[in-house]
Image 1 (cartoon, rainbow, N blue to C red):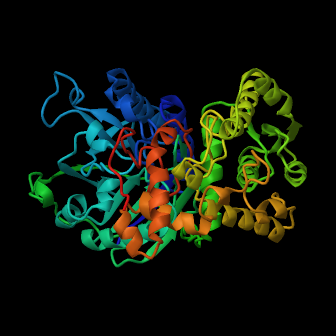
Image 2: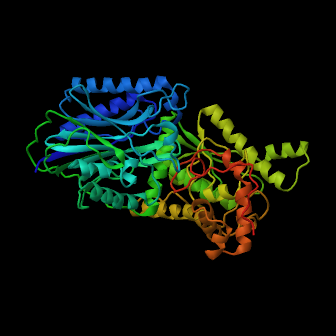
Image 3: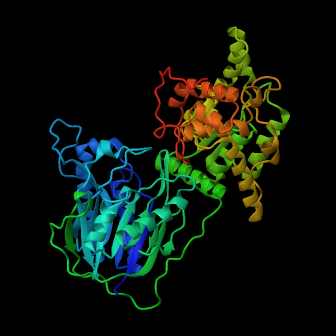
Length: 586
């Protein structure tokens, strides 16, 4: 049986940076060639970055993507890499955008893959299954392909597929079995969700059995706005054996020698396949000869604890949002509470202490222990720590306006927001907001106050998970012989906004261990009132919580973006009308 040395390039492209992404492909192809690779694969739309969203509708961008692909093929050859077949995802089009008046049925923008060899494009493949759920709107942007591309490489028939093709039974993988391929390359831009790695391997095994072929799955890594991609690239044989698996949340070159069945006599080009697909065949005349020395083995990375996985996702999402948008640093309010402590620790891990400014903004209601906890966190992490008392500014407002109750509480939060935004304007920092998903769900925040900011690293993190993350991060630091970043008192004390004397979150909200399961069922699980009550929740508490969630939609619509880690993050995952009289009340 032939053996191919596969190189899966788990890289971090940037949307719109065609030149930078092409440079990424060239650099990692050099590394793959140095490792003796005979076939190299890059992620979905690696050349353009992913997702490109409405850039698809700009014909100038589509043209630039196609031109960049041609340049890349030539540059790889000029680099001395022309003999090495390279599969790369890009944006193509065979007609005007579907939203234009001159659109042609069955033609338009394509989520595409191209196999580059000897300075040109040997074969292309257009994604067949287009996801239209959660964060995906690919039916809005792309036209599905109707052909399976099979390329004979090194004596092996290799089918090309893209991301969602793997998540649907039938279609390209059923067609691959009928076409008699030995290997299916599947290039991906599959966003992270907690425990998705546990789903992915069984899924790849099912598709490998369906195709009767080995699957090489390569996924991108990195942050793109709300999304973060964790990599987790792998190779799985037709019988379900996991040959190799890459680490999560880091760029990685996965090189592995794979024994594959030799290609037989191909059927004709018009062979009828599953889902009315047709087969398009091509061939690479030659691949680099196998190198001497030991067999290449990519290794298998063991899974990590949920808290470690989420922490890595949040760190990467924050780092890439800051760096790809070219912010020099970040600033956040340090209250001494658990949420701001976790965000500060994330920011220091993502950017280093020299790029993080933490500001204590005490009022007359700020407790001494909260001020001490904020200072202690700054000492432990080494971030730039400042103190800006807000009471004189609040008093000036109150001397000129007649306010009381919640209005005074919100005034304090808004003064803090003004100070943070002023520091942002003056010094160029990105303001990080620190509200967790539980607070966002029930509207427990002040619009233009504590909700102010350009990015929220914990937007998709339930309050109960915030505590788990804090405990895990401290334990991890202790395990490594480092100082735990988060003061124990910030973790252990009852949560409070400290906007009025003796205030606690529990004055307004159910305890978080009661609140979060209701929110998870309602928000993530789309359960209605009856379903929540049937799950064992108190009907009166359910009614109260659902009213808070439903009436806070206008706040969420104005909230900062933040890294998605769950199956249903606020934003593109969950789209509800603001003006909406439907209620789940009993």
